[in-house]
Image 1: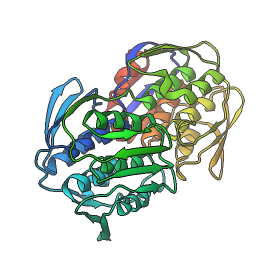
Image 2: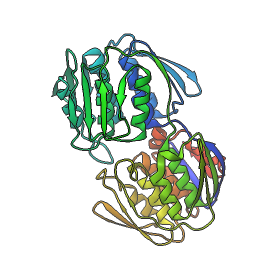
Image 3: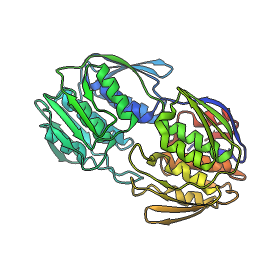
Amino acid sequence: MQKLIIQGGLPLHGEISISGAKNAALPLLCAALLTEESLKISNVPALQDIITMVSLLKQMGVHETEHGNGEMVLSAAALTHPVAPYEMVKTMRAAILVLGPLLARAGEAEISLPGGCAIGLRPVDQHIKGLQAMGAEIAIRHGYIHAVTKKLRGARIVFDIVTVTGTENLMMAATLAEGTTILENAAREPEIIDLANCLNAMGAKIHGAGTDIITIEGVSSLHGAEHTVMPDRIETGTFLVAATAAGGEIHLKNTDAHLLDAVLDKLTEAGARIDSAANWIKLTMQTKPKSVNIRTAPYPAFPTDMQAQFMSLNCIADGTAIMTETIFENRLMHVQELKRMNANIEVEGNAAIVTGIAQLDGANVMATDLRASASLVIAGLVAQGETVIDRIYHLDRGYENIEGKLSALGAQIQRIQ
């Protein structure tokens, strides 16, 4: 099993490029199911979750051509097997995103229930409730969602909770439904805007993406299009937090500061100087960071996907911070691993009280999920001595060549078997 070894204590300096957003690319790949024509997608990140999703689409009959440099063409002219088996869904919960497009295009779908998740419950009841309101007949048998419809119909759907994948699934399904669909209490993430832009380029009629009310006028068919995946705001934030914790000056290309206002505000509060323009961000950190309180909430508030990284920053910051997780009930599992590195953290319910110390100690630690693994990398960068991170396959699900990019910034980090 592969591991990362990090020698801490070095500031970060240099320039790197940010990859395309995983959380935007996955639903965009599923959008190819909605048309017989080809969908060309650029800036697709080289990640394990992307490989898994493409494999899933291929076994459904989608033809994929990879042109290199993050560019691929997907053609779903013939959908021969509208099934998402457990073997694939269990490794990537985003596979549920094929449900809406398959129902809209093929009129049937058989999708394994996602099952457990390390960071907490992610129920799919909002997806099912919405598709039933649009006329789908859905039954759950032997761990699978069985869905059929003659034709989806437009409906007014009010989400009980804000759900990103639920919003994306129903938005895709509604593009080919008969009539108008209105999604209320919809998620507002930039990745939903990116998906809507692609769908509109394919001939859909979507209005209001990025607000909590999205209106979709159904059309009879969609056509092919070309789309470039937006930059990854979580990867951007992770590198910015790393430089704030370790010190130095980094320049991130191919990204957008407007995608992470809440994160940049907290980094500035911690003491970082941030400059930005249309497609780059520069961060300079010349002092010891100050502790910052965090409370996660749906976009545009502070993202849950950045909570773990900021915890590592707070571990070596001046002062005490209260970090409250409101999205996932088990998203504090990295606390025990950080405490192995001598971090001063106390957990009370869904909150962690982090008191900064002068220096973390390098140690053997284990990643429990994707963002927890990123937090351990940041902790390793600022720790005294050697940190060895196990189970780094989590990193490969969401960070493209993270050790290569950190090495380019001057970090001493290597991957070993």
